[in-house]
Length: 188
Image (tube, rainbow, N blue to C red):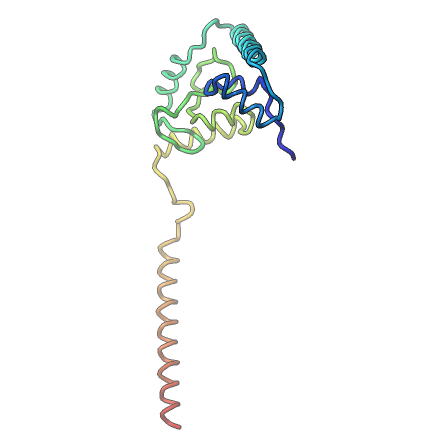
């Protein structure tokens, strides 16, 4: 599938690019020169769309302000193991609280999960189902971040002992064959 060329509005949304850098980059990518007025108009449209989206989100959730602080407190009380439920990342500055039903006003513990920025975005994009996030959240709370290999390693000791025994037998057989070969050469 061919990559789509970025639009001016998409590039204008990047806060890291100033207007001149944005113009040069857009020209290199699309092959079309862009004026400063076009860039400013794209940024204005983007800003209006963003503000409109915030207003719609606030009206939809029934609140005028997101209560992210309250959500974090509720999640911290309900889930003491604060790590990304997908990858296990435990760096506090990289952890966010995801509202599983996408409703910012719903801060019930069952609706919250700690996710790193990457997996939060992936969840919001619909790449992880709610049931998977809840299952992983339960797993991390039960294990407290300590890996458990019991299911995979239940008979590892016995298998290791058998392997050592087979290797010792094989070494002895090799030595015996070498000794027999030496004796047969001397007898000729």
